[in-house]
Length: 126
Image 1 (tube, rainbow, N blue to C red):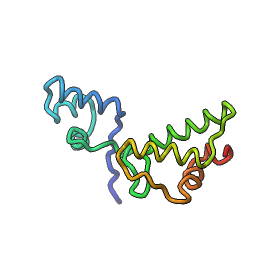
Image 2 (tube, helix red, strand yellow):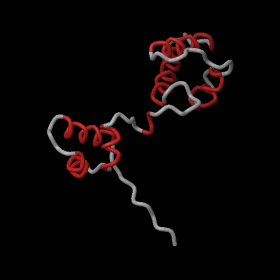
Image 3 (spheres, helix red, strand yellow):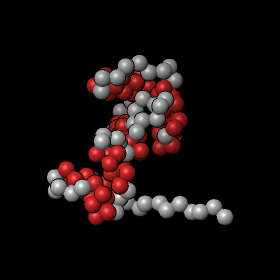
Image 4 (cartoon, rainbow, N blue to C red):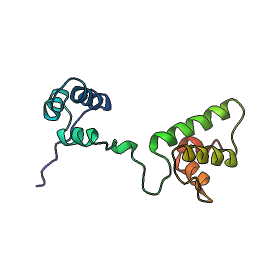
């Protein structure tokens, strides 16, 4: 019978508190991890600059999950105000964001369509 794997139950707030314990309060990473109930290895990874898995960009995606969420929220807000953005306006917005991040701003021909298809909240709106 396969062993069940122990999963940590912690929030990003717990991780942020553990990082503050190490950087500002003088705790060692193992002490801070135990104190806040977060995995020691994950805390060390975060201290070394690695981001949260949920915030990492998929290799073929241009925006992170949180950036896509904010873009979808902006589209829905514009739509609720009666100014639903066109595909070209969405494309221009994303290209500007990529330029600000110092990335190559070109998007694929179908990027906007695929973005809308990925988002259930936008499929019926645009």
